[in-house]
Length: 173
View (tube, one colour):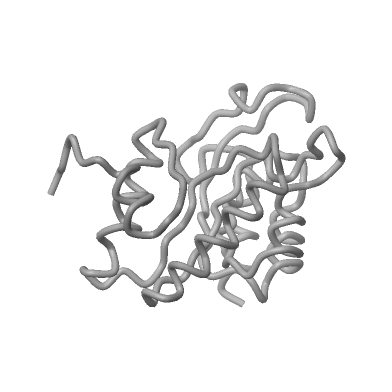
């Protein structure tokens, strides 16, 4: 079912008391799932991204949303991209802050970990007690750690240079 013109931001603020800004289709879909998902058996909501320019505010928002969702039987998770593993202007690494300062689950996107020039297997091990979902995908990472993530290229499984088979083996453990 595709729904358009649903005032998601207003519903979120009225029903859950969560200030909401909808600025792209991915967030709109996630917010719609939050608002209507529990009624159709949704047990997990994965946040596709946050604005980490103000890390304390992002952490506070995740904690507040997690508590409100738990009241409705929904577990909150966070989906990483490369930027969650790169220090912000204050030197904080978002993924570490999420793990230290929230109770949200983690959905590890193994390609974006690899694109941040980290070992996805080490990250899976490090956060194994928090991971509820793994996004296994392949691609060709950006040329240098300083390059834009836009220089990375997603590929069909087996057509990139990410360690997909090793990650799959670790995930099965």
